[in-house]
Amino acid sequence: ETGVTQSPTHLIKTRGQQVTLRCSSQSGHNTVSWYQQALGQGPQFIFQYYREEENGRGNFPPRFSGLQFPNYSSELNVNALELDDSALYLCASSLDQEFNEQFFGPGTRLTVL
Amino acid sequence: AQRVTQPEKLLSVFKGAPVELKCNYSYSGSPELFWYVQYSRQRLQLLLRHISRESIKGFTADLNKGETSFHLKKPFAQEEDSAMYYCALSSSGNTPLVFGKGTRLSVIA
Image 1: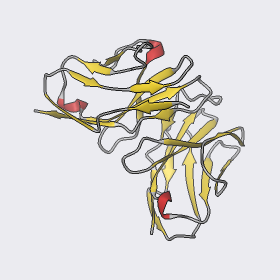
Image 2: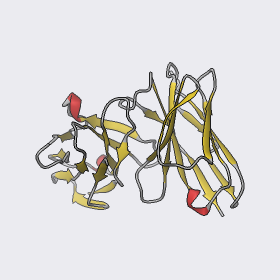
Image 3: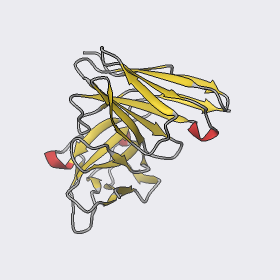
Image 4: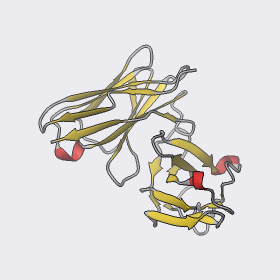
């Protein structure tokens, strides 16, 4: 059984650019949730993908978007990057939209200059 | 609105001393509460949840609805308990988790 993986580990972008982060879910899981963790804060829910559709969204603007693929892997896209987007982005996989049994990936550290 | 408060950013205790990490929540219904832990250089992982009433690595947490608290306790701290601890709340299994800001536990030898 393989765990949740994320890529890249780190990246640096400048304001106004666009970024794509990737997540591969744990074997057997069909749901991926994305979280933003700013420095000194707990993870904050961005959105969840289930069966390739967005299934719930937190308080994030539309420039945060995502995709889920038939193999259940997922992408998080952020357009028009702002300095405040600098954070650790976590994805978590689970089965059938569950939040109570989530397994987290190691995260992608995004720095916006 | 759902809210989780962890009043201590950092808690330092000596090895063998009791530990209590505080968590208070704000939610009008019946919440599901969790403790997550992140050890150094490791990913965030579930430590325990109130619904299962289990003890993991010697830690326990009791939901007190009257005080809206879910404090994490361990009678004798060990050095390997040093980590970042997050309390989280969900209104049901299919609603997103709301996390507190976390408490860093440092166990001093």
